[in-house]
Image (tube, rainbow, N blue to C red; front, top):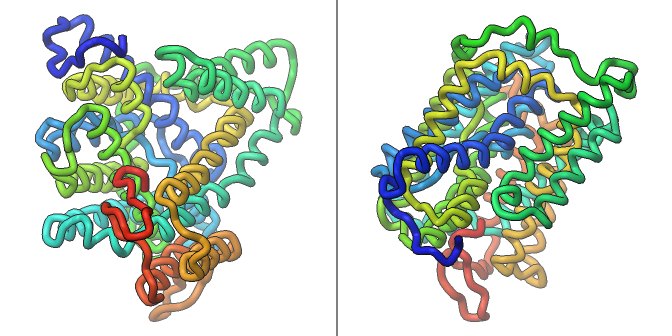
Length: 452
């Protein structure tokens, strides 16, 4: 199939095949997208809804396509980069957050994501006015790489805690992902996370029927909520609330998310053979992604981000028509109105989440390492070594964050916020920069535009 001519207008294939291709894109994004609300709800205790997540993944994708002049075949799903922020907000227990209900904490976390999404607009304006090369001088891989590494490493302990609920089940989920990622063929290779969820869930049903329990003696599965849920219903929207502490938790994470966006745009451009950075323009795709994120969070959903999984589908199918992606977005919106399906997904055992998190959290950190390696950051240069070292120590050392009072208001900087601020400031003030965004430099290092 990879030898065939690419299809740029899927209407030539007929409506039935277009609908199937849309389903393929939906399944590619589905596993990772629904895991964000599952992890946030089961692990951090914040009631992030699967229905709301799916609804705004679809709406956000459609809005992104409008901003990008209907030209870019990208799908926007839930961003894992913000999981550390959700965890940090869930642990806030001073000032106004003392004794606060989990549902209200989620509203404040979403408020922080709204602001994070608006930062995309600020970067889009800068890109439009001064050009992408000048803007990215302040965010080189020596800063963004270690920050992304810290995001994954901060989440790692929770993966172990969840997996410990039932190690056999967690290992099944992890093994399935590994097997299909390495040895899978065709469609199976690009949906290993979804396969890990489905196969491990089947194993959980069998284990539950055999009388096995979690480590604490509780039942592996509980279908009471599924039985009580309706077949059709509105997603549980809720308005975001705003607080400086939550904003400072979430907003810095936008740095990593924006870098991911730039990488995905370049990867899609290379796959399709069109320069989407130039037309419709990086500023337009940033605006689409940012507003989609803020819109989702304003009504109780997670941050959105462009999905590499769907780029993999483009490579496999060689169907580059954005209309197919928009079909997948419509499917996601429809699923957002089926509560019974949402509750069925929400009944997933914690151990499965833990097993999958082993891979996902490690992948976040591995992406940071990859960004540093592929951009050939020179760690024999003392300047680069100092910046990375300070970011890593701040990101991992300030486990409880840093709390101080501003005008009588308690403000908490999380470890990731401290790390981001420290890295950007050090990069700006230390002399001897050896990296130039998007062009070769004298010693042979080159910037891979799509890799950080």
